[in-house]
Image (cartoon, chains in turn brown, orange):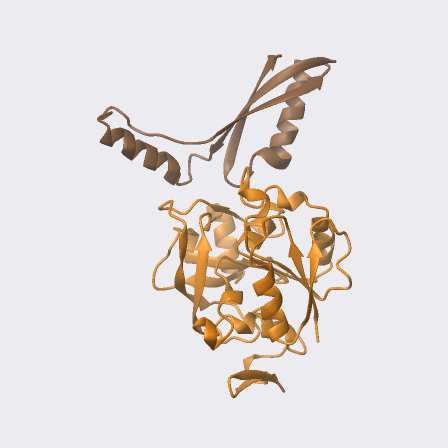
Length: 84
Length: 238
């Protein structure tokens, strides 16, 4: 078993209204960042776990996303495994 | 007299009002702690409003894994009546007992004010005491109240008459199809974002929410609004 650090990105699904991202976008425009065309706000989680290999670590992280970390109705997720 | 279990999660804050409203309607209501696994022969289960587990991760996402939820799920699968109010609605969606999800209000602000809703379905255990199309004033108090469902699910909800309440004057949170509350296909599991337990007596500004609880005391599933009469401001079963 080795220690892995898994970086998990959870984002609101693109088809859904993301009021938080919109509010950040408006604030950036107000600050003069006129070049900003869109902002979406999500969550970033860092999970430390023990696994036999990278594939197993990724599979465990995806299972965590499916059961708890992401809502399948409203969110998509992306898993990236790093060796701790 | 129905036995009504009001589930208390860490962070629930409408549990006492909900218990009171159920008792005022004549039910034998009692608390069940979220670690309990026995609903003590409940006829109906109510998940009250609040901020279970601080709304961490997503509203209701952690509460759905509380030990009591296995018993609530078994009760629901057996056809037992379950009502989720506000945070309770969020928990039922997270648990997959109701379709859809509740997201941040479209204009981000936490909203605490009365709203107007229309009763769209009266064939649920919690709306039997209303007339179809009746409009009510009940308060909302939520930051994550925007009901969303993909277009296919929303169409199924509409076609199946599973929209139980709808916002009328304005849609406070940007919910799909102005939805304020829904039920499952079996019609025994119901969720509502506004708080009927906060509007169950004239001293609270109105009693439009009271019949959610009186509906449980209606004697059988075929009973309709006409079977409950208001006498001197009190609802009597006849």
